[in-house]
Image (cartoon, rainbow, N blue to C red; front, side, top):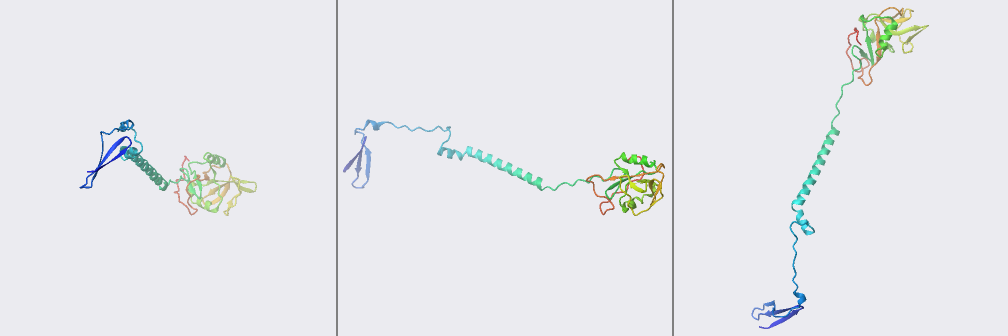
Length: 244
């Protein structure tokens, strides 16, 4: 059985070929001398299992506990963000709550065409100046009538008696307490100093006579519109009383 010897530095390898099978075998001849430099023993160092993963080991570890924790944290962040966005959307799209309109006039007052009126009734009477003072205590004045329809509204309260109006004579002029001139189409009977509402008519008398009175003031800012101007209707309150 012929054999060929192939030598490499530091070792002697022997190749043997079987003539029948044609197989070739190679082995290292232990009897041949070797280079001492090639006889150095190589030791492989394995990384401890608890060492920090690097490179390929890191990729392998990422499939386990570490990456699972990271995925859970990311999922929690996403869920919290989605919940926050849903809450914001609900707040923005929620219809505003309607608030009840502010009462147009105080208790014991009656509203008409954005003006509040107080009718003292028979329980409260005084001369013209005293009546004006009573109205001023409540941020009002003796009634100023700027339109015929306002006077028509007041004429329905006949039970209030002959009530002072905020109109008096200054020389030849009739002036309201706010300084404006009298411009209604309804006539004023008499030539005395102060004007009162006599049922459905306006008349004059001495300003020292004692009578009921009517106060007026603008309705509260932001209050609902009132009766008589094609708007909201408010109930007519009692026309007598000492608290207003």
